[in-house]
Length: 501
Image (cartoon, rainbow, N blue to C red; front, side, top):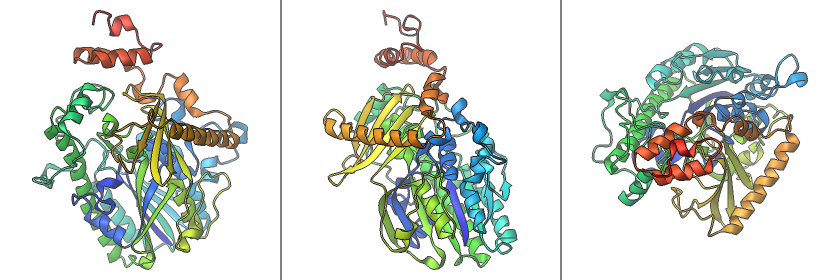
């Protein structure tokens, strides 16, 4: 089997037409969905980029690999020490090694490993092509490399897996100015209004409305498609338009890539898989254009599979799946065996039989901008997400939050106080998962404990005192007091939030 895996960083499914978005952001991707199988509820086990791809390529939760952060010790896999053989577990039980064992030549076109010093990501690849731009690649720089590979290698190898990593919808949004504004006169998302924006502006946190590029209000003139602080509805629309424009630009280049695949005569032979390492919050939870929580918008990803000869065309799968469950299924579909070390569980048999077969619940984790786990479950036919937060990452996040995703698709109404029974149910599910992870762990360590012991999520370390000053200077003393009270061990009240304020 020939497999083309399109790995689109930060691609949020509900910004695609095939997932219901009214703007024409993705005509090429929508065409793939019509000709293939679309999954409605696929979630990464860990986010953001480094934990997510580590989990997918290893088939294991970050709890077990140790990679839950993007800096500090927990950006590195747990040491195998005396358990390590001549090759480490990422090679011995990795996704690419499993595909190679059933005859696939494996190749990657990606700058991910260099961007994150994630050298374990290369395990099991026959060939790696690094565009060399540290994740600042644009589709016009990556797709030509993929086309060249298809022309040179596509017919040469009987079975292959080609990973093509595209970054256009990862901030900073950088579709060329010559691409123009596809959305002039086209309405944007309707969920945000003036009252909600005012509440966001009074709020706080990295990448919140007043600081959408980090912990301060500075924009970057090099990237005009994300202009800076969000003061008006027009500013919010500019950020949304920046994401959507980058997606439309990427989609056009995907059309070029798929046309080249057809030109090689491999279009009917190849399986095309499209997914992402995580999604993107575009205002939800007052996080703008970044991926900082274990919520629906960071953790849910698209998954579209166009099978050879268009089998399964037009199918929809609504079951709950981890992304690495699909990786396990692909191994079996390719004729291989899923490594025993994996947490990923194949659903290949039910897929081939035309049935939906998924998980009863999922646990999502995020440790780079906060320490938070999400429990995605169904109760009485309703879709819920409960977020349990150990470190808020200096955002306005309660320790327990509950959302009815069907009635409240943008996570605006926290039901935790109104539905204590559902929160207790989510806690029970999480406790059972945690016990299972501890049982399967090679170290007996919850990696979140190490993140907290090192000073909290990497992207927030050392930022609190200066950020408290900014909150005071910008008229958000109440938020400063709330944060200082939550993090007494990290901040000096007298220095950052004087009593006279």
